[in-house]
Image (cartoon, rainbow, N blue to C red; front, side, top):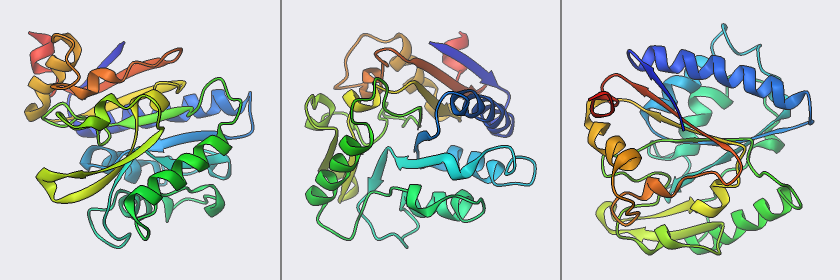
Length: 241
């Protein structure tokens, strides 16, 4: 585990942006495409806006980046809660991506059908690959969930499916999510965590007794890859104690 603590979300976003630019350059020297799974939430939103800014948008060969998502709320694309919409609004509409390389989780078909469709896509894309995603960006909820792996739901223990859909009772909506086994085959995984409201959750995931039913983010342990934690001072408060 590699831990990087920033003073605030602005510094965190800049550090992650610089780190991503360097890593993407490294990977594209060895292969002709870079696969990233994006996260939703406020912390990635600031990062995406920075990557689209004039200070960063010409530092990445966007045509070679293939975009996926870690999870999605089952709401229409034009809904403000839609993770893909957020990424388009803050990043993808502002950099020269190849639209054929952008793979959203569909919400215009049934949730189970959408999960099956996305899993089929991943099997085709990562066929015979040692590592799957080059980079997965993740967040962490104050209840220790990541992706749409929520405490107390069967999806936490999914071993076979790469993508799953389920009804999240607390939010009265369906979610579509990558499962832990497919994410753990990534080259690099990076958690982006800000805010003191995440401090207890982060501490329990890192140092608490192993209990994925309570702390689902504990399941994210790359098999042969690297795990990074980018946090601000607030989120790392309990770790520093």
